[in-house]
Structures are given as structure tokens and as C-alpha cells.
Amino acid sequence: MRSTSRLATAVVGAGLLLGCVSGPASSHTGGQSGGHSGGHSAEAGKRVLVFSRTAGFRHDSIPDGVEAVQQLGATGGFTVDATEDAGAFTAKNLRRYDAVVFLSTTGDVLDETQQSAFEGYIRHGGGYVGIHAAADTEYDWAFYGGLVGAYFQSHPAIQPATVNVEDRAHAATSGLGQTWDRTDEWYNYRSNPRDRAHVLASLDESSYTGGTMNGDHPIAWCQNYRGGRAFYTGGGHTKESYADPAFRRHLLGGIQYAVGDAQADCRPENGYRPLFDGTAASLDGWKQAGPGAFALSDDGTLTSSGGMGLLWYSGSGFSSYSLKLDWKMAGADGDDNSGVFVGFPPSDDPWSAVDNGYEIQIDATDVPEKTTGSVYGFQSADLKKRDRVLNPPGEWNTYEIRVEGEHLRIWLNGVKINDFTNTDPARSLGDGHIGIQNHGADDQMSFRDVRIKELPGKGN
Image (spheres, rainbow, N blue to C red):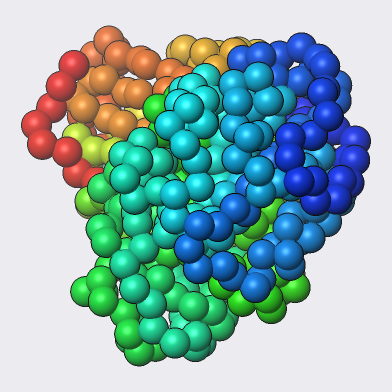
């Protein structure tokens, strides 16, 4: 059904390409930045500091990495400063930056005063990007260990491996397929970050030799940490990495997330099982009700056509659960219409879901109670929160729809935007099916990675 959403694209300022600097850049004045307090003005565009000091092993790929981030900034609309001077880590100087990139740093690179300044920066909403040996840094600084997500333990020889892409909605991985074959130096970590961070990609340990993480081997992840945003990738040992277009897109997406130009659900995700995993076989439990269809592409995406119909999961109903799925508006004009239905009885009539269930709306042009994030026709989303975290048409978003008894809550890209309780005796959220809508011939909506976690009991 119809709804509204933010159409504005992510803020991109004019990029000023800077070379490496030996210390903090010259004074830059301005107001508060979008990501954290006390930063530069939004009109000046986003600003990133690349820090590559080493107190242990030094990677010969560091200059290539610095140059790559500078080039990404020049084309991506953010200013890049690069330094190996720990004196850049003062509260005043850090306020100038929307994110700090630790590029293959090693050992103890900051003193206690500098560490304190960086902790304050993160707590006030700053962004962090860790590349490769950033995990081989500051082993005695607990705050940093939590921020990077896991410490380096060991590595085998450089070799090809298969990377399993677990989240293809995040900007760092949205351009990748379900697997990614590349050559690098693959770190083993002292702990598994999965319980505290959101894993974006993991290594298939059967595809190479020397993996020691018992088959669950995260290699890229993101998290919300102590008020800030953090992204880490284990890739980037080799010089060739920084010339690889796919790896550069991966880095760019991580930086865009860290500076706040791309939104994502970076909460830990465990215990979900797939209802649709991108394969034709996983559609066996789904049925099309009404006109139109969903087409399955080679990259595991379902895209709507025609309608008004509903692709619904007939394998079973659900009573208490968390449903997650990724979606994007795929049409050229950015005014597409769809929705996710919950709590309806089995039927080959799509209007049965409309009349007996609830729709969580996706659309860009309707009134508040019929707009993206709304419970269609019943309750608007919190529009300020929604607009702050909504990615624009053409980019992926993630819904979590949590049903417990007659209580329905909705998260968009990790932020709760709606909290609704059913009081209609003719409808029941607590026992029903789920489905995705194909609204009409002029509406193209794409969906990926539909997964569910059944929850104990029922709440209100």
C-alpha cells in the first residue's frame, strides 16, 4: 500500500584531496558535524583522518592504502588527511573529523592522554575504521579492543580464499555477491566478535589452509560502540588489495558507514534461520497470491513486477518472532510502493492479508500513517528517527519486525521507529503468516535475505 520516505541522498561535500601530512592538519573552523559534537560544518563536507603509525611490524602496503583512501575521498566527496603523528589525537583536533581510519597500525601507538581523547571522540559519536593490522594494535587498551572487535592472533601464508558475504545490505558489502574470492593475508583472531558485533563477511576455512577459528571465522564486521560507529575489515595486507575495485568499494562503504553517510543495522545478529536465502530452492515454501510476480536474479535478489499481489510464506505461521529482511526501491524514479505483511491467515487472495493482517509500509509519497515504517493506515513511524536512518532509493535498507503477542515493533537500519499494539479483536498479530507485496506495474521493489528468529513466549 502507499507511504512516504526520505528521498534525500546521503550528504556529500566537495572533496579536497590532501597529501600525507606529518602532523595534525592546519586549523579548520566550523560548526557541529553531523556525526559527533563539535565537528566541522556540514557545508564543508565530511572529513576523515587516516592514521598509520606503527610500533611493531610495518606493512609495505601502507602508502598504497593511504593513496587509495585519498582517491576514494576525492571521488566520494570527503576530505582526507593522513598522519603518523600521534599528536593529532587531541580532543580539539579530533572534533574536525567524522571518522578516523587506523590503517595497519601496529603495537602501542597512543599514550594515555591521546587514548583518552580518542575515547571521548568515539563516545561523542565519532566514527572508526580499522583496516587489517588495526587488530594488531593496543593490546593493553581495553576500550580499543572493544572498538576494533577482536585482536590478531596469527596468520598463514598469503593465499586465495573464499569470503562468505553474510550481510549484503551494508554499504561495505552491498556490491558483492554471496561469495567473494580474493587473495590476501588472512588473520586468525584471539576471539570471535560475533556475539558483540554484526558480522558482514566471514572466511570459508575449507577454501584455504591455516584457519584456526573452527569454521566460524568473521573477517569484516561493524558495530555501534560506546556512542560511536565502528567498521573493521581484515583485508588489506597486500599492495594489490588497494588497486582492486571490489576491495576499494568495500573500504568506501565502510568509511561511508563510519562517517554517517550510509546507514546500517550493526547490532549483533544471532539465532536467525533463512526463509529466503537467495536461492531458487528457498522459494519452495513461498506462494504467489494474486496478480504479478517476483523475479529471482542471479545475485539472489527478488524484484517485484505487476500486482497487486503478495508473495507469502506458506511453510508455517509464526506467533512470536523477529523477522529481518533487506529491501530497496529499485525503480528509476524512487517512488516505488510495497510492504511487508504480518499476522494474516493463509489465503490465495492478497486482500485477505490487507483485511486481516498488518502491513509495514515501504513507499516515498504518502501521508505519515501510510509511509515507510508505518503500520499502514494505523500508526505512523517516528518520522524524525526514520528520516535520520533511511537510505535513499537505490540503496539497501534493513527492517526488523518483531512480533510478541499483540505487540509489534519495527526497526529500520538498527533504529526503532515504530511501537504498535493491536487492539482490534478482528485481527491477531500473535498467530499468522508473513509476506512481501508486489504493488503494481509501476512499482519495483527488491528484497534479499529474509530470515526469522522465533522468540520464546508471547508478550504485550
